[in-house]
Image 1 (cartoon, rainbow, N blue to C red):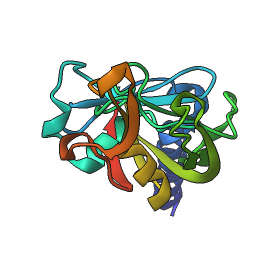
Image 2 (cartoon, rainbow, N blue to C red):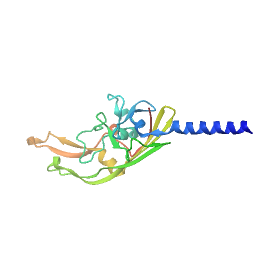
Image 3 (tube, rainbow, N blue to C red):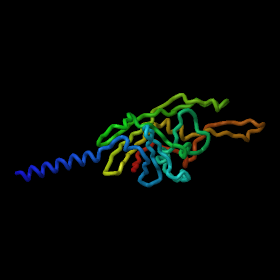
Image 4 (spheres, rainbow, N blue to C red):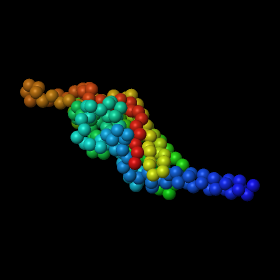
Length: 207
C-alpha cells in the first residue's frame, strides 16, 4: 500500500512539473520565428508588435502563392499602391499588435485574435489622383495561437482578409506620361498575377 501511495505521489509531482514546464510566459514569445519552409520570418517585439516578412528580401515574390503574398504585403490604409508590385514586403511587411499583451502572464497556451482596419474603398479623383483617399474600411483579422513543447515555441497564424480589402490591394495607380501636349493621365489598373494576394490563410512559425 505504501509503495502504491509513493508511486502515486511521484506521478502527481511529475505531472505538475510537466505542465509547469510547458506553460508559456508571455515574455517567452518575444523573438524571431521561421515558417516551416524557411521562406518567411515573424518577429515579435517586447511591446507585442508582430510583423511577417521574407527571410530573404531578394526572393522572387512572383514565384510565391497568392496566400503567401497575403502574409507579407503591407495592406494599405489610405490609398492605392503606386506601382505594379507587392508593396512593403521587404520593409516590415504585414504587421499587427498582439493584444492584450501582458509580459507577466503565464498560460498553457496563448491565443491572440486582433482586428486591424484596412482600406476597403477609395475615393479616386482622376483630376487630382494624389488627393485620392480611403472612404471605407473593413477589419482584417489576425489570429495567433502560441504553444510550447519543451524549448520550442510554435505559432499557428491565421490571416483573414475581406474581399473588398483584397481587391483594393490588387490594384495600383498607373500614370501615363506619353500623352500628347505633355499632359499625364492616371488610371487604376489590376496588378499582374505575380503581385496579387488572396484572402489569406494559415501559416505555422517556430522558434
